[in-house]
Image 1: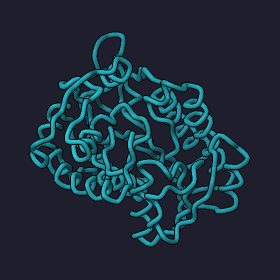
Image 2: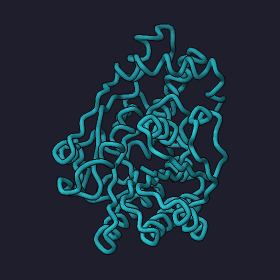
Image 3: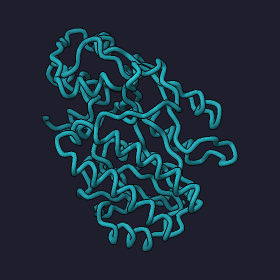
Image 4: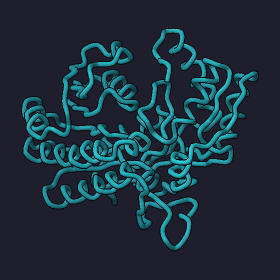
Length: 323
């Protein structure tokens, strides 16, 4: 199958490209940035420069390559988006519009949209339900969240109006042995990176901060399983997916099982802590379980056991740079 990715140079693309290539797919990877060194292993992957905010360039890319399936990953994440809301709007809002229009005109069969738990926020009447279901009033507190809500609605619109098979997931915070791109959940990964690199980490979140997280191999598998799911079984356009919801200090405890001398302290950053506090503490993903058999394979300790050696190897290879 010929598959095109937008935002392929990001955290998800790193692992998704490898999975697609291993399955024998023809992959066209696009990103505004050049191919990162961490993607150099992906032999046979066509890497193309693409700015998703440029409608003509997006249309030309889709018309030239005529992909059968598109994974739309390009986005400015929550923390970076609050530093530059206009950029987040342009990439996340206009970019998604451009990609959907290109799918319509190039007659792309299926588009996989990556949404986020950032679409949620505390409603005026009180805190979010715990766990938070798919269908609850959405009150995002960031430009990232607002544009993801709009992206979800645009996917539903293009599905109904133009027959594009657009489907997607709301990701929890994703953890992998690749540097993240400015999300508010980054403290969780840096507990591993700096736990290995420095033997210590000062988190920008409180010790009792609890949000939904997921290990990247599960995240990639969720995208692949949803992409191949029978349309007749799907009752929604966008699905909650969940894995585990540890407190920050529970992540530290898990890391210290493997790195017993690591030390962790907590100095909350007001802006990022506010974002974290606005998100769900856990997610109800029963619809995904029912419709396409979603089930995570990794819990917190299983992720730690797999991730610490991966981070160690990447540091030895110089693939994780200073932040």
